[in-house]
Amino acid sequence: MELKKSIFIGMCVLGGIGVGYAVYWDYMRRTNPEFRKKLRNKKRAAKLKKAAVEGAKVKVADFVRKAVEDVAKETFPADVSAKEKYFMEQVAKGESLFGSGEDHYLDAALCFYKALKVYPNPVELIMIYQKTIPEAVFTCVYEMMSLEVKKKQAEYFENFPPKDMNVRIKEISQGSSDENVRRGLFAAKDFSPGDVIFKENPIASALDPSLETGDYCSYCLKELVSGSVHDDSDLFEAVYCSKNCQEKAMNEYAALLFTSNEPSDPESKEARLVGLVKSGNVKFPLMIARFLAKMVHEETQKVATGVDEEYSTWDHIERLRFLSVPPSEKEAKEIKLLRELFAAKVPGMEEFISEERYLMLKGKLMYNAYGINTSRDNERNIRENTEETIRSSKSPVIGAGFYRVASYITHSCDPNTETKFPSKNYELSIVATKHIKAGDELKISYIRTGNRDLKSRRDELEAKWRFSCECTKCRLESGDCETAV
Ligand SMILES: C[S@@+](CC[C@H](N)C(=O)[O-])C[C@H]1O[C@@H](n2cnc3c(N)ncnc32)[C@H](O)[C@@H]1O
Image (cartoon, rainbow, N blue to C red; front, side, top):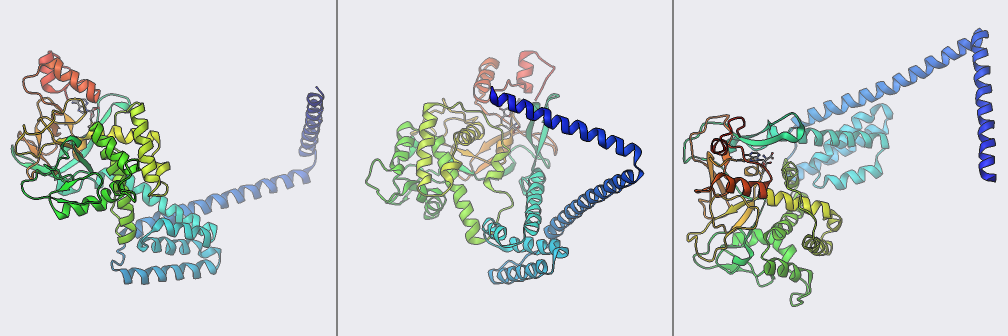
């Protein structure tokens, strides 16, 4: 009660002061010319100050934009000693410029930005800059970096896929809302039936774990006809078709995921991951684990070699659509295990593997993966792919792959392309099955169509990919001529 009362009195006093000051202000403004003049000068000064601040901001923004454009056209030294020399020169010049006063801060920022271009670990260098250069210079370097990243991301579909893949990704509007925009793949030139439109290797792939018996290469999924290579330290007991595949697997993921300091401990995190994948015969947690390990490998390679790919694996998968996978006990177990395993080996990865991110990744892989068939003898040992969401018009499949470009292909029950694996490994070829003209959209069948009726095809597509197929074939069979994909 007392507190409320004193707040009320305080508000009355403040209100009184406010009202009294406003009355005095109004009286002076109307009656005193000197007061009016002072007021005008004060307003003018404030306006000038505001304009100066705005002007400075525009000047910095223009400088940043031009710097990023100019630097993008520059060629930087390629070999290590030339890079080192260039780096030292730019840093020394930047230091000397900011030492000459604020007028030289923008030029100093440009030198530090250029130095970043040749430094093997830019993130580390940014952290050093933050501690060692004046804040205004640092902010400007940071703005240059941010603008560069924004531009690169905005131009993604202009730069990717590379021209030699003969296709472009385009957006197709199917209605008024943004939700109704889908992406598809379009031919950049004409193709005849049988032509290979493009080939690509997967970002991540996995042999069906029930087939990890020594018949197929665990890395490239090639059928083993003679001899195999394996590594005793690999708890997954994977076999490979060649030393090359073994080395790639070890470097990209196997050393991180399947080798342990306590190889005989059945409760080690690595042994539990092997158990989860093999006993449950689950491909997707294995593909996700490999994908995450590959991301780590990519980052370490970037630092070690100083070679930075234009787009990272994460950039590629970020744009792909996905099905939301509802959280369940099964997923919770997978997440817990992967977090524990990575936490012990890669700082920061435990936090990165959040429930939301894991489910998103799982959704992306399940939604976009293609079935791989590399076998000479389709019937031998191969499990029918029934319960999982894997695009395949041919069955049976021996594993799955997640591909950057082919992921965008739209479904049709009467397609103009098909998947092939002519190298008898995970390398996917998209092959024309009809005449395709430049500008035509590529279509593939996500399911086995055979002699199946309309309802059975639509039910499978609806259940696995959650869309109602309106392709020409479905439209004709349903007697609906309004819509077509
Ligand atoms: C693997 S993604 C293909 C890429 C996708 N179109 C995109 O926009 O990124 C599969 C999704 O594409 C859409 N889609 C593919 N084929 C379709 C079709 N024939 N009719 C309608 N939607 C289709 C559906 O939303 C489907 O779930």
